[in-house]
Image 1 (cartoon, each protein chain N blue to C red):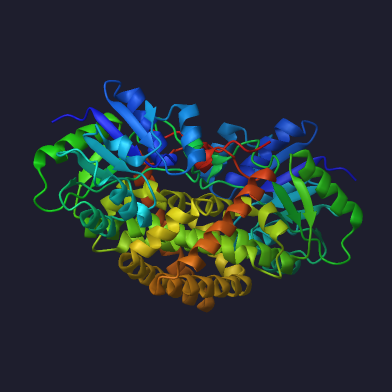
Image 2 (cartoon, one colour):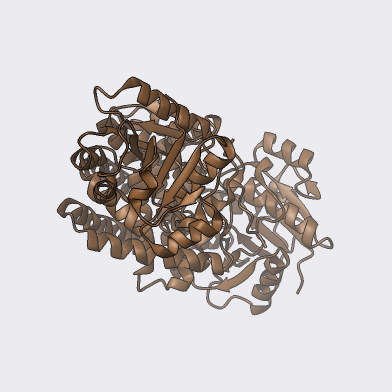
Length: 302
Length: 302
């Protein structure tokens, strides 16, 4: 089984990048795109994000052997219902959502007969919308597949080959574990970035202008993540509630311990932690998961 | 009054960058550098971080009209005492530390007769040591001066001109306000980055390998900050305790409110905050304080 026709439902950063990546890396695969927002449809057509852009979702999936839902996780079920009557038998239905247990359930409810393989390419930027996509978004990134027990192995292999073709590395795990891993590597980092940016902008003793002027001290890094798509992230937190609350509990325990160390002047505890975390950075770079240049290679010095 | 001879005490990222920036931007100013670590001294000599590198601190300041202490804030007092008997009358003593109230007090204790103008260029990278410096580090960054009441205005003007010459913009404020502003724009961001990287590496349910593999979901940003110099940051937290604990209190209140919103499924509260924080990112970019390219312009996609 090989993927020939891909339907991309939702043409924002992820959907658009898939379309562009297919054209660059898999020229024999044809793409059909749909977005329920007319303005996004028009922009996607202008930018050529897919070979063909349709005006209704049903039309986009008619010849598909792979349908990828690229909408916020809270909108997955509705998007799946829209295509349910028009899905070819044997087509794989997948997605790119950041939480997997809730998506697996939503898709199973909407498409009880379909071959469903939830997926999550761990890639993105702080930008969103059809103009934000680019063909190399998935290069050397990990794409996690969470096939439910009993999923056709040929279908899993076909989806793996598709993502490998776009430059990604594949990992397969169960949805529950995915949600725990991503809570710590993605969801909690976003939550605390959103929080500190909110905290800083609400202060009375420090003006917003000061916060912005002196942001190069570290704060600016958090503003990037806190500029991510609000609907996407609202849905992630509502749909991965258990794992997020669990990991948030661990984080606040650790933060409280550091607070106590600061209050009591316990430099040793601080130094021990601050030394340990450097090793993680080195490993991230060695594994090809970040730019090794200082400051991410930023060019903003004039 | 114009600065002609600068002594740089401590030749890590900041001290080394000052030496290189002077050579590039202020070729008529001569620099003398000192570091108490012999290996750093040797490396600084090899890299030419200052016109002359001395083996004792006293020797470095002998002809200086400006001395800049570029050591961790907890080491300022000792560094100042080392030069106290050799400081020319009328020389300005300044520093680059991230907390200013405690440094002002430490320098006043060690050098009761000197013209002391504490300063903080809000610039840096996650790297440290003599090899990490570069001449454009201060370009378009803010340098905050916190002259104690009654400081000679000509000396403040001379120090301002010096930093402006290196490409920085100048702001003058009192030390207490500096410490509050930097607690939120720099110290708390570092503290929470160190914390989440520590939390992630201590988990049992999620392996360290998984944390690293899937770090592109947001976590990797925090690993950069959490790779910063451990001694420097230990000292910052011990020396800006009051402001850090105050701002940490605000942050944890806000985080608790979001935790409650997630637990109760209150999407509106989440969406309202996540929408608001985007504006801060735009302002940071408009003010020239960050790279506008997606993902800081990282190049790590293969």
